Image (cartoon, rainbow over all chains, first blue to last red):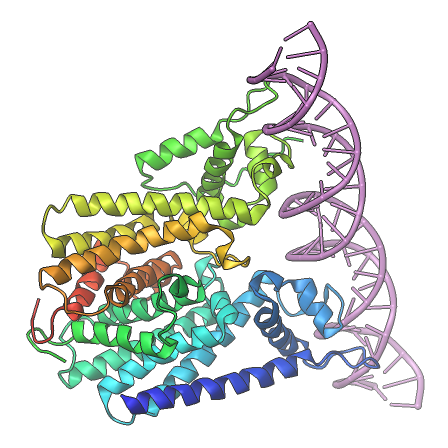
Length: 236
Length: 236
DNA sequence: CATGCCAAGTTGACGCCGTCAACTTGCGCG
DNA sequence: CGCGCAAGTTGACGGCGTCAACTTGGCATG
C-alpha cells in the first residue's frame, strides 16, 4: 500500500509535466508569413485544453480558441462541424489520457490484483484533481444524439473496460465475489467518479475533509468498496 | 415578435405530481393588464426549472425565462444579481427537494437502520433519474467564489448530513465499523452521486445495463458499499 | 514551367445572449 | 391625496455560434 502511495504521487507529477508540455505546445500560433497552418485540427484541440485549464470551462469559446492560435473565427469550422464536435474531440482525448494514466498506475503494482484495482481507482480521482476543467469537459452532457460521436463512446468504454477487467481478474483469484462483472465494475466506476465529481465541485473542503489528501481519500473510499465486493463472509 | 420555439418532442416522462404542478405553475405568465407581477422571483425559479426540464440545460437562458413569463429581458435583474445567482437559487431549491425526498424514503423504512441507509441512496439516484436536467443544474460547477452563496452551501450540507447521520446511527447499532462518520459518509455520497452522474450522462445503456431498472442498480450498488462498511470480519 | 482545382482560411453579417443605463409605472405609506 | 421607491421597460453594447461568399496558395497534371 505504501508503494501504491508513492507511486501514485510520482505518476501525478509526471502527468502534470506532460500536461504543461501540451499546453506550451498549444500556445504556438500560426506563423505570420504562412497562410495555411499545417495542423490546425490538432492545434485547436491543444489550445482548447490549454484555455480550459487556464481560464476555466466558461472561457472555452470557439472564437477564443481561434484567437489563441491567431486564425480567424470561422477557421475551426473547416475541422469541426460545430462547437459540440470540438468538445467531443477534447473529451475523447482526455479519456484516452485518463485510460493511459490508469493503465500505467495499475502496471506499476505488478501482479497483486487487489493493489492493481485500487491503483486504477486512485489514478481516476487523481486525474480529475490534477486536470479539473478538462475532466469536467469529459463528462459534460452532450445534448446531441447519443451516438453522434462513436469514437467518444469507445473512449468511455475503454475506461470502463479497465475497471471491468480488473474486477474479472479479481474474481478469477477469488478476491471478488461472483456476479456480472459489469454490474460490479459499475459500482467501482460510480464510487471513483462520484468522488472525483464531488472533489472537482469543491464539496470536500466544506465537509471538513480538506486535511486529507486526494490520494488518501481515494484510497480509503476505493478500499471500502473493495471490501464490500469480497466474497460473502470474508474479510479483506 | 412572439416566435415560439416549438421543439416539444421530448416530453418529461413519468413526471412526479409535485413536479408537474410546479411546472404548470411556472408557465403562468404575467397577467396582461397588470404591470407588476406579484411574485416574479419565485416565478422565475419555477420557469427556470420548467424550461430546463422541457428543453435541456442548454435552453436555460435568462432571456428565455423572462420570455416564458411574459416579462422583459431585464426584469430578472430586479431579483438576481446575474445568471449565476439564478442558477444558484435553482440549485438550492433542487437540493432541498432532494433532501425532502430522501427523508421521506428513509422514514418509510421504519426503524431498520440498514434499510433506511439504503433507501437514502436509492432515493438519491431516483431523484437524479426523474429530474435529470434539474439534477445537473444542481451540480454544475459555479465558477464564482465558493462562499458567494452560503445558503446553497447549507443545502449541500443538508443532503450530506442525512447520509452522515444514517452512518452514525448504523455505527451506534454496530452495523457499520468505527471511524470518522464524515469519511464513511463521503464514500456513500460518492457512490450514489457517481451512479447518478453516470446515469444522467447516458453511460448505462452503452454498458449493456439498460435492462436493469434504476432502482435495482441503485440498490445493488448501495448494498455493495454497505457491506464494505460493515465491521471487519462480519458479513452482511 | 504554366495552369487551374480545391482544401484551407478570411471577411462580413445575422440573430441570440448577458448585462447595463436611463426611463416609466403604479403600489402603499405618510 | 400625493409622492417615494421598488418593480418593470426600452434600447443599446459587446461577445458568442454560425453561415455564405470570397480569397489564398499547395499540388497534381499537361
